[in-house]
Length: 482
Image 1 (cartoon, rainbow, N blue to C red):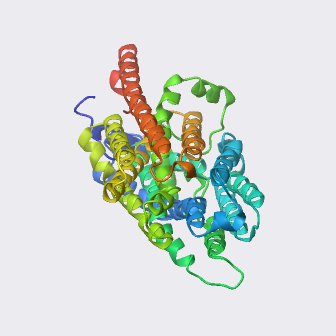
Image 2 (cartoon, helix red, strand yellow; image 1 turned 90 degrees about the vertical axis):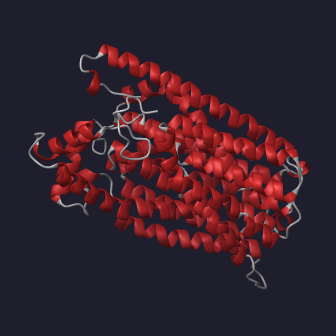
Image 3 (cartoon, rainbow, N blue to C red; image 1 turned 60 degrees about the horizontal axis):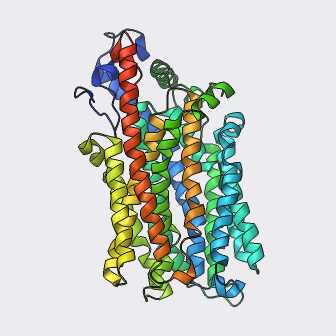
């Protein structure tokens, strides 16, 4: 990449000159009418407003989303299987059915969001999955659990992809990757919070309500209460955003029109969607996302069980399951600096997946407790670091149109959720305590993810060269950001 391109945010490759031109033209249509300092101030003010309203609320709701989804792992440790008469791989079937429900409607979710509006659809989804999560606390058979897991997946689908899409509506390209990374920080934070929280909830003693039931009921009620606030907080797109003043709305509209990413008020054209779906590079990029989510899922859902099988009590396993996620959260906080140090998304992503791979190798190689705990922490660190890189990279590199953004965000979530199919069926009870099958599969998937990063880097480099050669003004030609 050209050394004059200066990263203004995580992995972004918008030069200072181009940024100044965009903001000047966005404000007054000329390049010398307003100082760079004034432009930067207005952009900072705008982003702070969106951060405090859209991003903060979305992150909080996503923490609850991840906590509700992963609460079944804690419930298993405190008696879910015994009380429902689950044997052999019944638990794995339950986790697989969640993925079936989640993916059943995921592809169409962003089309519905464009039609209904984020401010109405996303809070409604939160209320729905909160109710379903709470209803898991009143079931009495494994068949009812299976039905609830399918319904939970169906009610959650569309939330993450919808948030990614509206973030692409509100933020400029050079700010987008950072915000997507911060949004995904909610995933390890959910595990850090939900582990000790669920451990505390499971200690509640009631004559008729069992410990695992309290986990589902109270987490679901909290989600419903927070989701209701979304009707008053979320906005559909900046063009009609109520908490922005007229000057800020005009500024961001012109700025995003200039960079070609104003998609909030645009319609999704089927022709554009199929064009993006036909690009093999988009599909290859998703391989890395799949790998990162596979590693994260190992930590989110199965960490309590993996730790419990090492000889710790149920309460200790719940509390200690927060440790790998805490390592992942720290990695996500500093992943921006690491991307800038590497100078690219693909190299930083490759390093993250390699870290997760080493963790899986450590866990399959020995039953030594300290070594396996370190391995689990490395898996969490690499997986969540990758989650802080790949979704933002996917959307930023495919933000040239509303169709590209919608497809990229939808596929990112689709492939991430698809990892649940593999994850739910490789960590099986009969393979405890080593779980050799699960860790072996993870090692292979991490290797495929690394390959995906390398292939994407080579493809983007070739495409960038061709576009520069075919354009008279090479500096203004669209360039893929790798």
